Image 1 (cartoon, rainbow, N blue to C red):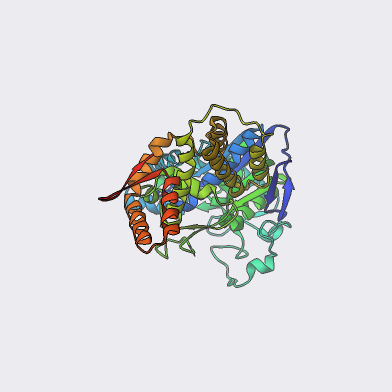
Image 2: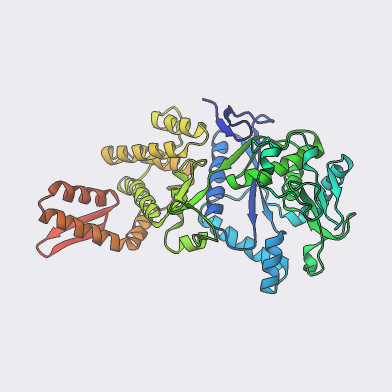
Length: 457
């Protein structure tokens, strides 16, 4: 079966074929580094980490670029608030970003360019767009992109210009000819930090956000590359504007496959600072281990909404324990994956179907059940190897299970109390179910005249 990817641009599953045989060039929009990364960043970064891992499993050489936005309005505001330079703030936040990403097992990209290192390339694109009549200078010194002069605008979002205008107040905002026009180069303001602006043909200023990705992707991957990814919130306007800039300047498609991961909801509401339901990765890792968070993200399909709550993280931790319990019961052999093996073939077919990790994880549980039933070190080895393609199950099982027991001690005691209540009510089926569920998570119950105690297997 060939690898198939859902292409946001065409709104269809398509067979994947890279421009260059055996080599995939992929660009994913990265972080704006003014604060700690949040759960939405974790979702996107883990999702595309899985994508690039699977492409490598399929035998491709992958050039993976994930940019760092280190100049932007929010960064400037935060640096001023903190009384520090832009560079000091962004250096610190990049280090914190990698601290979180390393904990989550997110592999480093081939290139992680900083926007501030590509300002000359950005200015080259702005000049080209102005020369083609797609950009104009505003009275206040900004340079704007003229959206109506680019015939393909709206093709990624699937909306016409009239639809995009719906509900907008038509006003000449900041010297724009049209409310949909966006800034390519921002004129410097008197109160902006010195290290936040650059000299140019257009006067002192700094790049707009969208032009940054056009410059970095084209510089490192070429004018056309294979995959462009990012969160669903970036589809419009950011990615739509990237297409307009890059294709307007170069006259060729920017990316052949566009991939977007789904939103993160918090207790069924979209995560938002204004709603007060905003969680950083660091917040979550104070309560849950990093592999549990990664597993929580991976076991959902990347395009589906992801509903975050402590209950769902607890459930993910319990599920991951079941997999580690199988590896603890039976030491895994060191095996290479035989993709003709029925379990491996099902796993591969799921991943080849638009990276259907939810179905692939189901295969891991089938293997864990087989390991528990047969005691086969070879099947345990296959379980570990397949988990490794998702960045999972590579830790020491006993260490993971011991840590999990410490985290869940109160929950275990609650389950023991529930079992005791079931036995008192002569609901022996429920009592046995609780015992088996705890056993599946590596918790052995011991009944005695003095009560019930427990220990890790």
